[in-house]
Structure formats: structure tokens, C-alpha cells
Length: 120
Image (cartoon, helix red, strand yellow):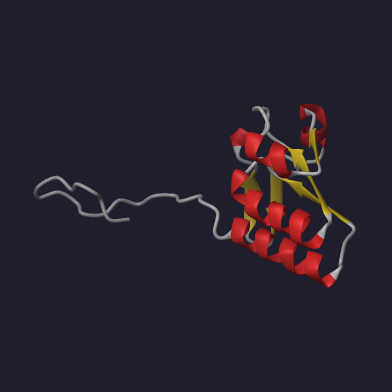
């Protein structure tokens, strides 16, 4: 990536690992609203604590009249924005979340890879 302030006479680029998600919130929101309008569910459950999903939750509840619940996978306090608009919210206990994850080391046709330490 291009350095914001490269040193004079030094490199202009740095090699980085970029781990940001790409449009997953938008995809979840679009499918939630689409599936609600198509009548594909009676109750939707999202595993999130991301308040960016507040508006699609509000649309599904107000405009379509369906329930949308939240399962919070994070240890921090649930999003107050989501609490206000979700039909229900449940905290996923740490042990349950840990038991639901892949093993620390996985292997596929490209080689061995590891679960990020932050997921442990």
C-alpha cells in the first residue's frame, strides 16, 4: 500500500495484510429485506452486535411486520441501537461460541492455516 507520509528518499509503499470485511453488512441487509418481502422466514436471527444493521432490522419489523432477533457474539455490552429495534436479543456464552468454532489449525489443498488468535 502507498505510505501516507513516505520518508524523503525512502520507500513509497509498504507491504501490509489488510483484514477488513468487504460489504458483508450490505449483503446481510439486502438479503434480510429481500427475504422478508418474499416471505422466506417467520423470524430472522442475526449473529451480530453491529449497529449498522439497525436500519434493515427496523424496515423488516415496521414495514413487513416480521420479527428479527439478535445473538450477540461479543463480550461487550449489546448495542443499544440494536436492543431498541430487535424483537429479542440473547448473549452467546463464551463457551458456546468457542465450541462452535473451527479447530485452531486447518488444512486444505493450498496448505495449513490457523485461526486468528483474537478468535480464541
